[in-house]
Amino acid sequence: MSRARAGDRGGRERLVVIGGDAAGMSAASQARRLRGPDELEIVAFERGHFASFSACGIPYWVGGDVAGRDGLIARTPEEHRARDIDLRMRTEVTEIDVAAGRVRARDVDSGAESWTSYDKLVIATGARPIRPDMPGADAPGVHGVQTLDDGEALLGSLARARGSRAVVVGAGYIGVEMAEALIKRGYEVTVVNRGKEPMSTLDPDMGRLVHRAMTGLGITMVDDAEVTKVLTGDDGRVRAVATEDAEHPADVVVLGIGVHPETTLARAAGLPIGPHGGLLTDRAMRVRGHENIWAGGDCVEVLDLVSGLYRYVPLGTHANKHGQVIGTNAGGGYATFPGVVGTAVSKVCDLEIARTGLREKDARRVGLRYEAVTVESTSRAGYYPGASPMTVKMLAEHRTGRLLGVQIVGREGAAKRVDIAAVALTAGMTVEQMTSLDLGYAPPFSPVWDPVLVAARKATAKVRATAT
Image 1 (cartoon, rainbow, N blue to C red):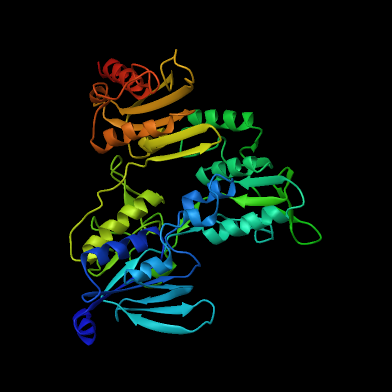
Image 2 (cartoon, rainbow, N blue to C red):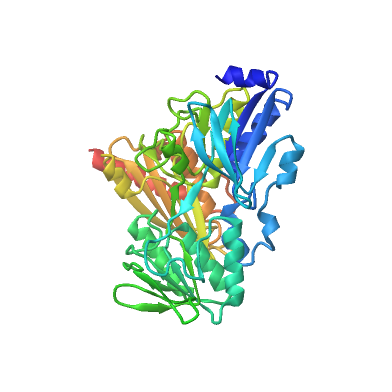
């Protein structure tokens, strides 16, 4: 069927891409580098107003660190079209017909619908924000922060707000980053978190350090609580959020609860979905069981190289890599995506937060016995001006000493140290092997023993002691 369709176009194949952001347009661009427009026609559909933008940068735009919306746009639709990629904005794909090799798309503004056939298909539908099913969740003044449209809507709401009280629902990456953005804009910020500590991607003892720092910044932390409704005023706008036993006044509410993979189209088409709701692919990012369909970005599940299980880890870094792999394969080359170790960094004001690998509960879930150590150190030589405290937690496998995970909380210079551990995890190193890593040293950058290596030394000693 693919050959017949290509034959109808004079032998030229058609690649259709659903989704115009990181994974989708990276795939389209890479395929175009490998094959010219006389060999491969590329049609991409994007339902929003923007393509190839950085959703990760939205909190920093809202907080004023990024001057304007355009700073978050990597490549405009016009730039994509100039490279012979037929990018159709404000066009939503509503159906995938796998058997016939075609997609149905609807013009968002006019409602007009049409079918487009494909020889090769890329699904890069991203993720959708979790919006709680409760009264008032859609009231004016309640915002998610997934797209540039969301960012513009939030900034408009902040400009119209009659007061300066903000409630952030959720204390994960988006929650803490939006709390920082609102603090910078002069708002009184309350964070409602259903966990006992913020940042559930950390172990509770490390999350406690984040809690302490956020409170020190003047953020009101409401932990172990869940929002049950959004209360509105006579004008219909948000005035407060309610938990089971309290009300928290708000002139604006930001939802930072997390995201789900957007796989509605894929499910309806009968494509394979994993336990976390994401599409399942092979190492070439090809949808399992489908030779001419690829998927990448926030709509897929990925292999965790440490645990050996599949996980849902929606990050822009992965999406761009997926796109490169997909574009290479769709363009006739060969590439694979081996998996992830779960590295992520964030910050709230001057506090830096980083993690990679497994938490304690992750290790227990997959049946791994481990040793855990925590060390206190500094970002620079203790005598050098500006040295700041840093806490490093490290997990090593019992007996073998294989590194399992690292978490870091500290000030300037803390977060990117997690990259040392990310490389060690990817290489399957033991904590003892890590102690010999030849890391850069000078007093303005590190103590003689870098904090990560101090943790590795302590973990090595504990593994040896418990192995006897």
